[in-house]
Amino acid sequence: MVSVNEDAYDVIVVGSGGGLVGAYVAAARGLRTLVVEKTDRVGGTTAYSGAGLWFPGSAPLRRAGLGDDVEDARAYLRDVVCDPSREALQDAYLAAGARLIDELEQNPWFRSFVHGPVPDYFTSSPGASPTGHSVFPPPLELVEIKEHAGLVRSSLPTERWGFDEGPVVSGGRALIGRALAAFLETGNGTLRLNTALECLLVEDGRVVGIEAVSEGEPVRIRASRGVLLAAGGFEHDRELRERHQSPLTGEWSNGVLANTGDALRAGIAVGAATDLLDEAWLVPGLVQPDGLPVFHTGTRGGIWVNGAGERFVNETRPYDQAGHEILRLHATTGVSHIPAHWILDQRQVDRDSFGGPPDEPVRPEWLESGALKKADTLEELARLIGVPFDALSRTVKEFNGYAQTGVDEMFHRGETVWDQMFHHIVPFAADPRQNFPAKPTPDWPNPLLLPIDTPPFYAATVVPADIGTKGGLKTDEHARVLRPDGRPIAGLYASGNTAAAMSGRVYPGAGTPIGSSMAFAYLAVLDIAG
Ligand code: FAD
Image (cartoon, rainbow, N blue to C red; front, side, top):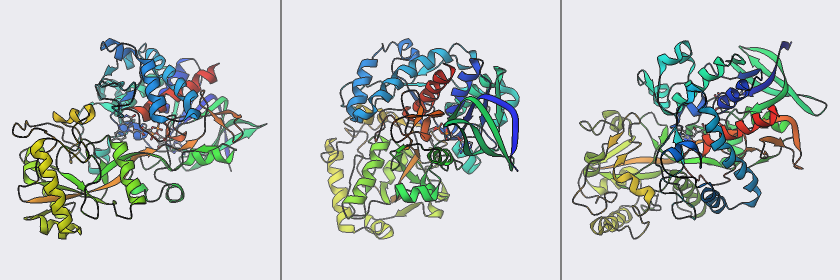
């Protein structure tokens, strides 16, 4: 029997990633707000993230002396998304992001965000900023949030491999820890863990609450003002993946395992329209010794080749663009690009390390597991990975010529401001614990083009992975969920990866996913609060 929860709320927020920030904003407005979270921790994929937030015009950018270039950012979004049907959503996003940061920074828990220079990803589009529009929360000492510290989801490497994180957290964990403390401190916020939305309650055409399974028991909880679906994407739902996204699979996703499209299904069941279900925030995934990929970006050396032994992309290109390119070429060329092979040599491994600290560049588990193959000659390496040696040899020779001149005539690696960011940093090394400053390479004109000529040679595996799906319920500029005829479903809102992205099929800049999660949660609350 379904037990009726008599503690009715004004607002129910389903999911505690970016939605938790929306929940704080609602509770801070005096709305009795319940967050239901499927797992025993708050944070979702947001907690795994770097918590870059793409918020043009926001105060941290102005404090960094970067001025207010919202109109440039608008022109940029228009150009890169190139979809008039999303312009209203983009305008709402741009207005909400800056305003949300202003509002958050009034609370000591959120003081103060800082700008982090990451170029906009389509570097040559009109309005693109070389310093970008990303702002980040400050790190957090976990003791500051006292007993709540244990409720915050751990980082991906900690969850996957048990790495110790230490007492100070940054990025997504800092954002979520701060949001949790701020939310609970309002006195209007309630958190219910281990509570999974199953379906929505509808009365007279209006969503008035949810049915959920809480600690194994079915419950019905009412919300007088609105329900916000902020339960992430469907990255780990096999059926939805197969139907909409093949050959992408949940195993390759870095989204949290709990994101199985529950809110998407609940929305569809009450008549919501959907959009972009074939899309994801794509990334190249570097397959680790445990057989699963991790988000990789900032390739500084070596090359990626397809099944024909040929290069096919600027390997340093922004991750979502590289991910899309792998999928496109795999689908259209008749040549296998999944997996792709990352070919390296000892010179590169010595410079940037691979999987280990500088004094142990290759950890044994990489070789023992076969995640990294090693050979004394390129011919032997080609045999190990099953690509034609003559083609691989030609590809390497051609690339080594580019290394001599410093100009990648084929894919122009190292020519954009994005690529050049990796002259000096090794941001996501093969071992996600490591973050090395780059060693100088004085002998080579382009530090991203080192010749591949020093044995032994290595090959790692790259697959198209994602950091969440980005198609979902269709929403308007107030985050209201829409029916196929464009009318809103009263009382129902969606944000983040539960909603179809305002950025359509592209990833404009660092922080668009969580920016969208927070901004549309905020817009939902503004609408709910009236
Ligand atoms: P989530 O943060 O995943 O939250 C969804 C929550 O809903 C989860 O807690 C889940 O358990 C819960 N849930 C699911 N189903 C139910 C249910 N039925 N009932 C109740 N609760 C439910 N993006 C950026 O913008 N900037 C970055 O710097 C960035 N860095 C990244 C780095 C890494 C390593 C990774 C993996 C991702 C990164 N991303 C980044 C991507 C970004 O983290 C996600 O796309 C984004 O956090 C999704 O936010 P969300 O609020 O939609 O979902």
